[in-house]
Length: 195
Image (tube, rainbow, N blue to C red):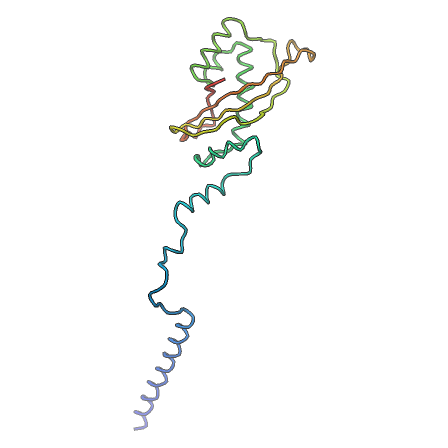
């Protein structure tokens, strides 16, 4: 009978250990009473999360560039520094091509309407082949919008051009140009659509 008593003692011991483990698990994990919030109530809503992600990806912009926030909110791969550098280079290339009467270069960088206006001016000899860039700055972002799957950004340029290699003859111009590009385009090329 001694052997039977040991089995009873083992059962009691294992029951005590199981009870202790259940007690510890319940104190650590808690118990569900039915009044807890649903698990989805703890998660931020999709719109809130999306807005937070958009706000996080908008870099700090200068005061004269704040209108570019609209583009950042609607286009995931937009980089304003790359755009502004490219716009500055495009301005120089387009004005130089115009001054030199280079219609072939202009055709690839401007819209048909702008090309027609430049072509007419070149044909009427109102361009000045002796003009060279002296300085160029982007003064501000005039407008920025995303509509109909097209990004449209208008920039104010201030340029100085030297005439006939004479630093005494510098002409200062202020121009507002609008560049456009489809939102789904991965090409770095923007088209000049308005001057």
